[in-house]
Length: 461
Image (cartoon, rainbow, N blue to C red; front, side):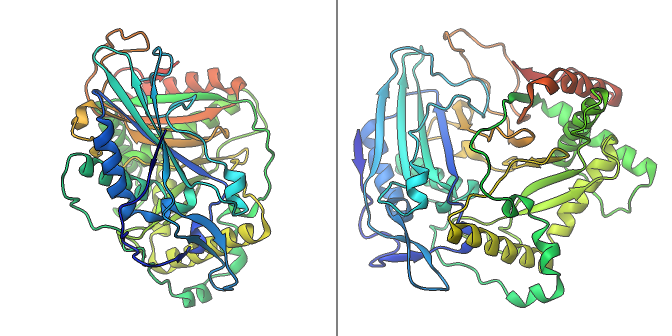
């Protein structure tokens, strides 16, 4: 175990307290991120790089506190406390990651005491772990568990890239966080009904979920670059031929993959004569940076884009509904009103000591996509082709993640060579109830074939 403190002074200088925005108050959630490198990490260089990174990201070395300030009652006391880093030599390769982004079980960073964090105990907001595997060639994993209140996926990507550059003794090419928060004009709320806005975020209205998650099974789907291109081209052509919308609708790869998966879920539930479907409501977590918030907005900058499809069995109609939800969510006034509503709901839950419930309803699907994030740019000098991003996903049924697919691993659990495959493509992972799995995969493959897309969908066992 090593204890790593930030180099002083940090970017926040002599400040003793940092006010959190209400949209940062995701108190119940950790963020687990990590990397597998095809090579060995130098321990001293890594620790020195982390010292530099913590100087630029000092909130990780603080503690959650409450204050008497009615406007900003939640914040981080800036204590510059050291971060724990575990170093482990794996005795065997049982913990070696699978050839995917999502890892279950998760070994690659220690857990945080989230319950203690929520009540402002003297508890760490970041812990890290480095595992050296006895493979040939050697590989190393580097992982972190952080409190979501300190930063979302975009912010964590910047943190990892900073460590990577420092490890290589390179200057950081991006702007170091300033931690100033962009103001949002509250007058935008006047144009919207408060209840209507709150109903856009049912996950934040539902409180104190059951601690017992339903039994669910993981589904991980891999799409090749060619399949993604074909899927988008085919659905776009059908959209044009059907004259469903005007030329403002340009389907994205994510729209198409999400529509393919959700309509297969609906078809499977219909074939099973289930009362739990079809999927009519599709939510996508939306990064507000580059919208009403600047690209360098620190910590958390998240909202939702909510789609309602009247044709849950039609992949084109569903893809159009998803795209329209993004267009609506990106309208400036509406986006600002949604962010202010989200802030009010997160704050309400935090002040009351309640947890929000992200369990998707029976006829809904939620995608928290990191499809556009370039995680493997934090390659520590090993190169992106030898860097593999590692992450987790909630086991709520129909809560999904989408990523760029990792480069192919050159070895498996037993250090055996992997079957060759090309780089690129996408990974789409979520959990289903066990009784839904067979019917879902059947309907997905039938739909894939009916669309005329080449090859089979690669499904991880």
